[in-house]
Length: 458
Image (cartoon, rainbow, N blue to C red; front, side, top):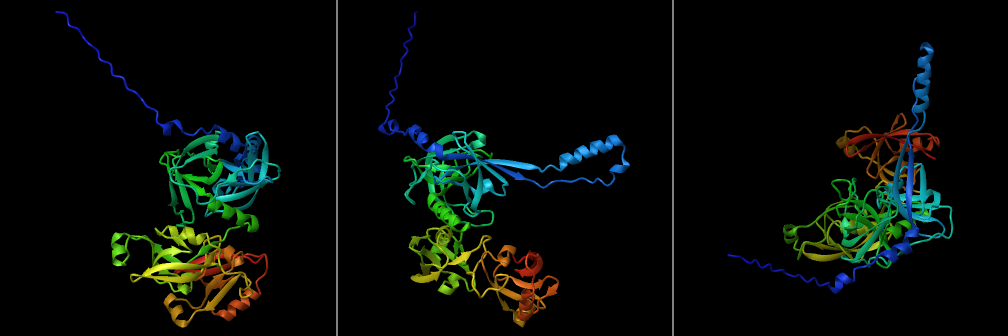
């Protein structure tokens, strides 16, 4: 019996949705903005090495020649090279990149897509925001335009241009995954509300621009999360609101000053919210307050929950450093807190952080030659700390000898040079006699630990 097989073919109809049909074409955007994007090559020169030569006369001539050849090779400075990206922000040669791209660099070379090359100098660099401002000697350069601050939305298309792994001026695209990500540094600092994207960012993209569909810069590519060293779709960019503020300060002062509140804080979970009589988990719970710090002087105490600072809502504890750090030191700000279930408002005068994260005071006539304001220790404090003498630092002036030596408010100075410091009178006499441009040993205690540094009056 003959069997007949009937094959049934199923036809699938794919309908192209209007949304798919309208996916962006980045070609015109790239053509417009890429001339302002640069590749940055850096060189870090290592120290020269030297070999012992005092025994060469005892060696046969052939070995002396070999040893001399090795010495010549070792005396050449070792060089480390790195690369990154950047972009031009003004026609007269100012460029923006990451701090970590040019950190400790002895030579910085800027390359444009049209093959032009320039040597760059660092106008200023800020470790906390990971931004650096460079300058090249050129005019009429192509520039980028910054988008309006705080207009970026989650889900928007964004595009990055950079030189990943040395592949010059590569273009990648994706969407904004989240805004305001808190990523503390290795020192626990948290001053940048990062933009998270799924744009493919790899080593060499650092410092390059992140564009919106209008060809405007919305961020500066800074870091990625990766288990392999390459992109897995978790990249983070510095928002242009932070970048513009940093650029302005670096141009004017060569450094960046940030606001300081003087508190230790933590997030609030559901259980804590109930115990603190909050309607929902929100705000930054204050664990500790720095004595005589800005928060302490304003009346904020441990147990308060800051929910609003300078008109901006604080949803998580990580939001507070973002807001406080962006405020100019010396400015007044309104602080809204929950205390025992009631909402209270305080006015705080924002303090300042120096380049190492310490509290700084204004440079005034009250500071001594080292840039310090100090006070005596009473007998009870000396006994508790088991010290024979010493004086306590209350304030450190920015750009002073003390700030450069790394001293902080709260440190207790016990020795200067070879002399022990027993009281204020001895200290004042010693610093009056300190020579200029000469490193002097200084010994102090910080949180019970003795530390030696050198201090120099320039």
